Structures are given as C-alpha cells and as structure tokens.
Figure 1 (cartoon, rainbow over the protein chains, first blue to last red):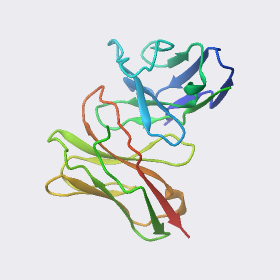
Figure 2 (cartoon, each protein chain N blue to C red):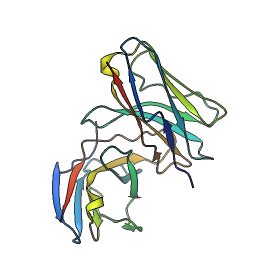
Figure 3 (cartoon, each protein chain N blue to C red):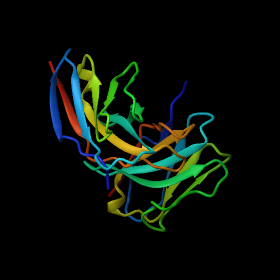
Figure 4 (cartoon, rainbow over the protein chains, first blue to last red):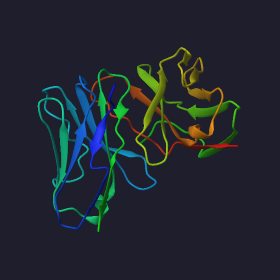
Amino acid sequence: GAGVSQSPSNKVTEKGKDVELRCDPISGHTALYWYRQSLGQGLEFLIYFQGNSAPDKSGLPSDRFSAERTGGSVSTLTIQRTQQEDSAVYLCASSLDTYEQYFGPGTRLTVT
Amino acid sequence: DAKTTQPTSMDCAEGRAANLPCNHSTISGNEYVYWYRQIHSQGPQYIIHGLKNNETNEMASLIITEDRKSSTLILPHATLRDTAVYYCIVRVASYGQNFVFGPGTRLSVLP
C-alpha cells in the first residue's frame, strides 16, 4: 500500500514568509509525528497527534511553529515568519500501534 | 539525549555480512531496541525491533545480549544499496513516545 507522503518535496522561501508543509499519513494510522533534521544532525521531535486527543506540542521550538491535523488524517505544519535557522528537512511519520513509525520522504525547506 | 552508543562509521564488503553494534547499558526493562536506517536524502526506514529475544525478518537479524546492555544488527548479505546511516534507538513501546535519533553508524558497503 501507499506509504507516508509529504509535499512539497522541496521549498525555497524568503526570510519572513510563511510556509505550509503537508503530510499524508498511511491510511488508518492514528498517530502522526513531525520531526525536523538539520544538515548532518539527528532527528528533532516537533509535535505528535494521537486520534482526537490534544496534540503533544512539547517539541515545537517557538510559537512561530504550529500544526494541525484535520479529520484524523492529513496534517499541516505551518511556520510563520521563517528564519534562516528554520532551514532543515521536515519529516512526518505515522504509526498504527505503539511500535514502529513509518516515515515520509521529507520536505527540504531552505530559507534564504 | 540518545541512550545508545554506536561506532561513527563502518565499512563492509559487498556480499559479506554487516554486523553493526550498539551499546545501551542503561536500558530499562520496558524499553525496546529499534533499528532504523536512513539512505541519503530519504526518510528513516524501519528495520527491526526487539525486547529481549533475538529477532529476524526479511531485512535483518537483531541479536540482543542476555543482559540487554548491547545488541547487534546483522545484514546477512550486504549490497551497495545498504549503504546508509543506521540508527539504534531504545524506546518504550507506548503512544506518544517519539524516537530519539543519535548520530548513528554510517555504513559503507564497498564493491
């Protein structure tokens, strides 16, 4: 079946602009995670959605970052007033159970 | 902080077994050992996980020591496409537990 998909695959934006990144999880997966990976670094947890529960936003680096998940499926990560330090690969993962998470290919964000 | 220690890099000849070690001496009784890999410019890919018994699937085998303080991921017949960064992660199996990825081991499979 289809895996996790993310769009766009690449996004170049000017400093100060807002961007939206989209994640389509695997159908039926109730859990959805956002991570980011800066060049040469490990993954940094951002936010977690589980069913209809309130999301765990503990990893969001600032209030410029927000995310929503509509209908328990598609999720959008929004970064307002982008800064150069926001440049990274943003990864989405979904999970059906408590074990493995399945990752999408990521969105490479470059803030100029 | 990642709770695991892995070598920074390893080489393996194509067709030979690749054995990737991981130390997790502070692992708790309810934490599983997971392995993921990340091929250049792709998202992490799940490989295998285990609690205390050895595990095998179509991709790899996972050998966990009896005291659970270390483990080894075995790729039985490495190919050039197995060149990637391999991450060993310990994690409680519960909802909301995000994965904490350390620097991993960069495996280079050589022709």
